[in-house]
Length: 313
Ligand code: 13P
Ligand code: SF4
Image (tube, rainbow, N blue to C red):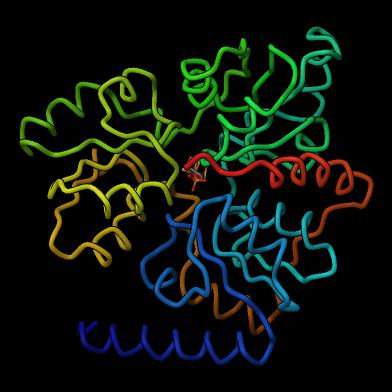
């Protein structure tokens, strides 16, 4: 297709989406890994924590969630009276699928009831319901440190658990889950990138392996990356997270240079949602995400406890 025609069609579709959002009194939330044309028109773009906070606080009737299933589910848990829409039902999170409520219940029997379960929001509502408190990458350390016990069990991301272990005096045991997108990145790849881009700062998401975090200049959530790259004097940055982050980094810092650590860092689940899907979701009111009350109430307790802890980055 002619490029200018494609751009025109995208702009028109974006305008249609904005019109529908107004008609439906809907708020559009987009995670920092979503496609550029989706991030461009969202009411709020952010990391998992900011989006969960917004879902809990919104006055809109409908929350259109452009992200993956666990994020929309968290919105449905926090805002049960709102209609929460996820444009593509199959947008899941393989890390979240690495643990089930049954498996966690089994493990809890071995761990004992005096060790709190800290669950990364990248998890199902059922798993959250089995947990004492949730966290995101923006408050994981603060959440663990807020607990009175000196031992915790962390699910499902082992890389985030290992990162926390390095920065807390508490003992952190963990479930052996991981994010396939972040886990594939190696320290060698980062070293090669550093050779190509002299003086570039390495910014990594804590879902990366410890060998990558060891050589990072800064470790933070996706929104933490915006703050860091804006405030740092450096002109070049090697970014160790999903490539959707580049959209806003480049927009907010046109004079700086951003290099994704490897072009393989694409989360297929985050990219499955297109602008057409977003439009269809608003026309057909789909797909409505709900959580059964019994699970929702327990999962909400774990999320509310998390929201009471200030973010650490
Ligand atoms: P953030 O909460 O840092 O945005 O991360 C979410 C996520 O899924 C990372 O892979
Ligand atoms: Fe899940 Fe990884 Fe995709 Fe984040 S990037 S949604 S952790 S698979």
